[in-house]
Length: 419
Image 1 (cartoon, one colour):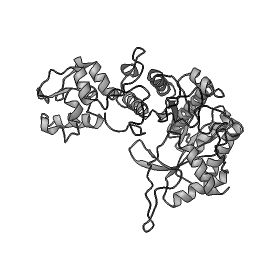
Image 2: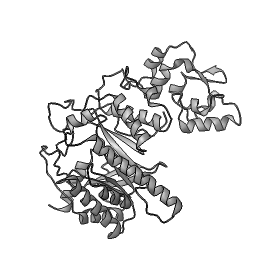
Image 3: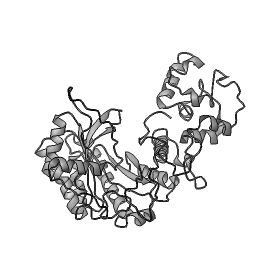
Image 4: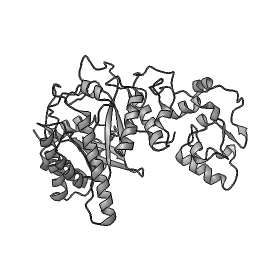
């Protein structure tokens, strides 16, 4: 098998990991310079908003596990391939020299056993750093159950580590991935957390102390393969953010790749539900909402017709309308149509003069939603302020409220804009 054939197979096998997203473009030119259809290229974003191109590949798709939701499961009938560590180094360097990529995202199916797979992953990134002298970004997936010493070594060579928790509950994980155990995954997370914190403390005392995964750790959960509710999913994410200090939890809409009696049969993945989970996650991480403000056991799923912040505002309509010339920052960012940056601009602008209705657009306030929840110098933006929450919901809903698993309505993306 040629290296290009391996790349085609193992880049395709990596596309189901949601930790970074492909641009989906196939633009190319026979006359100009560059192409945008190279196998395995995906885009992710840094904390400061920069878009970074990564080579996203698997070390191997030859898996001994039989997770029912996974494309690379043992029983799935598709072509298998495995990279050698030297091949990964050569590919990464050649892609980097051609300015296709700025880094590497490397994951793997479980080849033979967790320790063997992790050894090959560590050898790959070590060679890339030491022999190929690659200094770019590397994100490495940890294999749950691998020896702690291998995880410790991996963190010294890469920028970010992650281990996928897959399901929010042990019962769902046992049902769909019986060879995986939540306690094993959590133990790996705990180890990475401890080593990251220890490395940070060492760097405070010794400037040349070795870095351990300076980009932190992340994880992924599959959405829609199990009957778990959004309450289960967001509750687990909140636990991981608080207790494991994860940088991100990614949500991956389940895509049926093989018929199985226990899996949903809808041919379209629940992308809109995935998108709502990202929006709720954003509210918790960035807007500092308590996750139980968004979900509860009585209403355990996020609505599909409006975003979570609008849903919260309509459920707390007695808080509104808010006078934007007086509201503090924490209240401003709870108004639908006003995001973090808009709230900062409002506070800065009103320190100079009172904000007028005509100032809202330059301040990037989305009046389509905000007009139902604000006044400006005591003036409403509505001709009739006697609207009820139910009527407002009808006016600003994305679509008529669909069923929980109605899908295909929203692009696969992590929410990074203002809500």
